[in-house]
Image 1 (cartoon, rainbow, N blue to C red):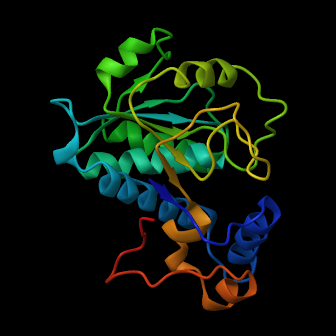
Image 2: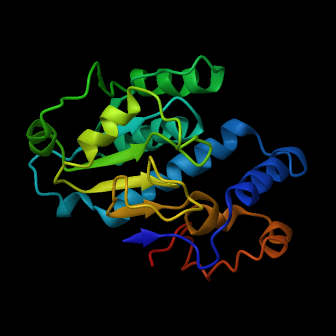
Image 3: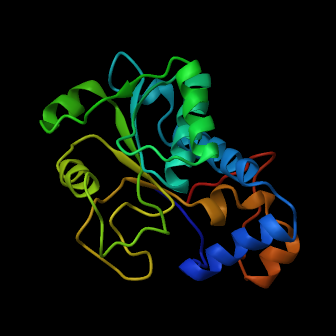
Length: 224
């Protein structure tokens, strides 16, 4: 299942859209991350409804990185908790940025557990969780210089048997170059395109030729 756009953006275009939203349209950084994180959680509920999960408990492992994708993962986990899933967060390198810390505290206050380490025995992950949400390395990551602990985490994720859902771009991938050396998610949640694209001002949609679809009803995402 892929939730993405028929006209994918290059990394520079996605960054330019975000800059315009922040400077010209006066969106706040926290506001954008909240929109994207909630939309990610909604995408998970569409792809993996509670009734479809194979395990007795609706457990989800959310792996967060130190940058914006990690913040989006934290917001996603919080909303999944509201939607009656049971998220657990693995957040090995926490950011010193205020916003990132705020999102972390919000998850802690909702009693979402944080793992102190990720099991290297893959079967423990397969047995404990229904799926993994990859919110580690976003489009801003330098895929040619990924530092620990992320190479080790990617190595583990390549071996898991449960589904993986990646936020924006699968961790370890260069979004502008095809690659086979990385994780292969069952679901790719695209943030700028279809997933949260409905909120984008019309002038931005037109400028970047996003060709967004007609969203059904009040939905903010669409499955392709």
